[in-house]
Length: 112
Image 1 (cartoon, rainbow, N blue to C red):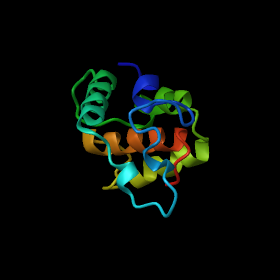
Image 2: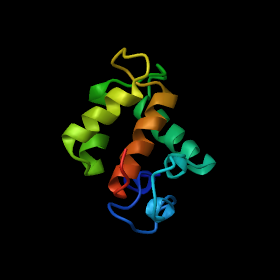
Image 3: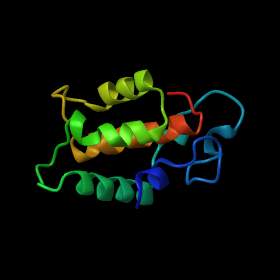
Image 4: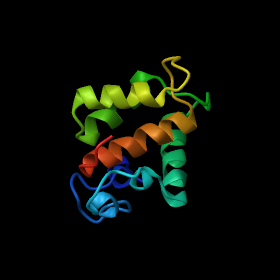
């Protein structure tokens, strides 16, 4: 699948998580939870960006994905920092899934 499909619509469209966070009231966090299918898509995307099979992606590996996301570069940078749990400058598949899902949520207008 392409990154654009996995990241979902730029705003409120018919993506997998679209509309979930549209309910009124405070953000409960439930709308930020990826589905099993989304997680599998993120893993597939990760594997496509990691042809050597190292199990980690650096900033250069995901630069194009961040650019295509349409998310403000400062927010993208914050998302990467939040997702890089061990702060080693690389993303494991789990950290990558977190980052891509947060990018998708931002594209849909959800707050972080």
